[in-house]
Image (cartoon, rainbow over all chains, first blue to last red; front, side, top):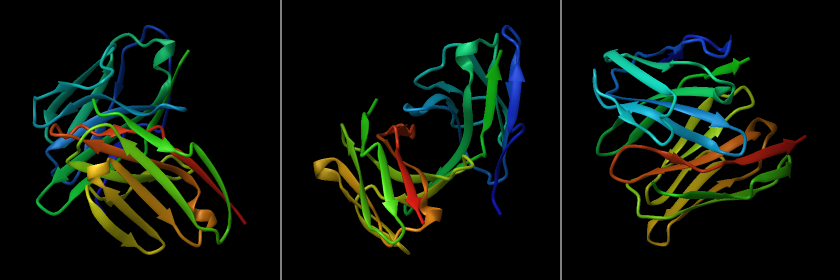
Length: 114
Length: 108
């Protein structure tokens, strides 16, 4: 069964801490994404990557950075966590061919910043 | 980016009822997908449907790209259909833009 695995299901961090959220996919997908989900707002794209060592800003990149050193791993970094970054974080990977477009999400990490 | 509006925001159904969820989008798209998020937070891809009609069991979807909307039909709803349904679209850049979702509650 193909998977996107996020390292933590729940995480509690203090304001000002540096936070790493890890995501690994086993499907050899080129594209990987980080979203945050907040009530009433749906999912908003933070960063995405089309290839190793490549990254692009999404709609809400402020306060975040990413790293993609290997194809299967995409890390989200909160440089200095703040309470307004308390949210559900979802990682996804995708492929596209002529017939289909596959998008697979991880189970999410619920981050609380206190 | 492309704006996505979903309606209704909330839907309460009795088991066995049928329903229609709507997704409107603001520009032409290369991709439109419907997702279901179960009560445990897992997002599952239901349909890839940039145009036309598809069916999968009790679920079906129709996208009318020229009029910029898509519909998701749930027939003979079951309690396991509860959760949040998201519509998501992208243009040329592979970045999905999500609507705010429709929260469906199916009561036994």
